[in-house]
Length: 273
Length: 273
Image 1 (cartoon, rainbow over the protein chains, first blue to last red):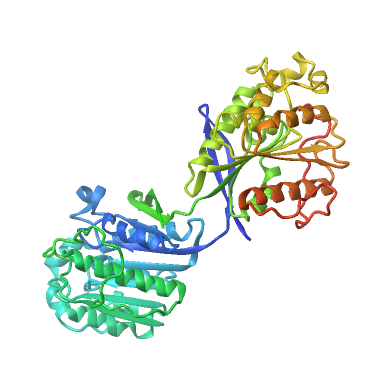
Image 2 (image 1 turned 90 degrees about the vertical axis):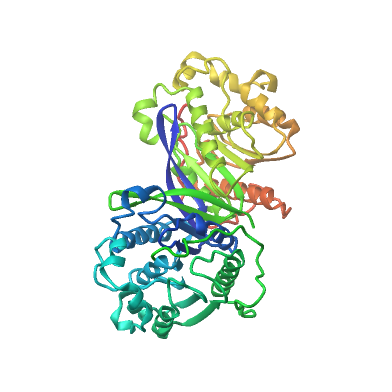
């Protein structure tokens, strides 16, 4: 069996000696989890735990403008900056010992789904999971994200079908040849069904497509049962993708099979996303 | 399955965002490898690779006075300082994610075997592997290690049987209730057979004792076949200890079963140890 080696410094008596960890060379899939606007890594932590227990190494993180960096960046952070955040997190995950860089899943919600879609055109991604992915006009890439809602009629933009060629995230999805999970919230006041349709039609080259609508759910999955439903969808999809075991398909109307986990809304339902 | 969480900082654009790795909670045995006087971690690297491929996490390291810190410490380093090195390395290994702190093996050669034996009285050690372990008078614990050879008749001390009560390393072995591997070199000009006898008789409370003499071998295992024989003994012993599979016992006279690995003498055969 191949092994991995990792140099390490060992602190002793105010000095440092050199050491080497040698570990089994087992490679496992990596899963990057990208929260939405107004959210934080904490929302994906419960999901990460369940996904890790499938045998994956997960990374969840706070986009700039959120959690610790909220005060410094919330008003000014641009899509370009948050894209750099996602790329930095991806690269950290991909080069972590034991992560198979050829078996990386990226999962994002809302604004995080939009960024995850674009990531798939910039880094090797095998599995792409998008829940209520947001959609923005390409213009203003370097404008503050908050400013986009003032400069553009995003609500209008999202009400109309957008052809894949006309949008950076949709172009990325159109070129993506891995497996896609798309999850819609039936009563999403932020991301209308038409946005999901644009993503769905863009997924024409995906090796497999799993499209689900969570009945009765709002954008932020404020109801605990909807959190559970998404968790079940996500874990079952990843489990099938990772292990290739084509068990019975789970739909949103199926009773969730995972243990009940405390729910936390992802975004304020009415927050601008 | 339980999972492990590990906070991480992600560098981006000269700033830092916060992330969390979530990984499968699998625990595996840890193996600490301690080189002898005049040696370095490099000697144990080949062994560490084979041991890691059994499914263990190994740590090998440079004692102060060796490799990068040779110039600064070689003349002055004391047993107390090297003991602190071993403790620091042990603690780093024991708290590393995925290492089971209740399943740690310590393996040492010569001076490293002496330190490993003492470690077993200071930290939880389940398996103790000693190859040609050295023996020193307890006095002068804080004297430079090199000075011991001038201040004491170590050769004389090692020619006589030493009762366990009269020596710190032997007392540690006497109290040790785990599994012990003792490996002698038949033609060891540095560590006479009597030292091995002292260690062997001290191992009276060991749960199991595996005592082997490598026929024709010198102290530093300068012959490649002797390196191979030790490698085989060590890997077979650890494999039996870890997996409890009581396969056929390997002796030094048995044809080694492992693949041929490039050999590197551990110490200059005539070096003072």
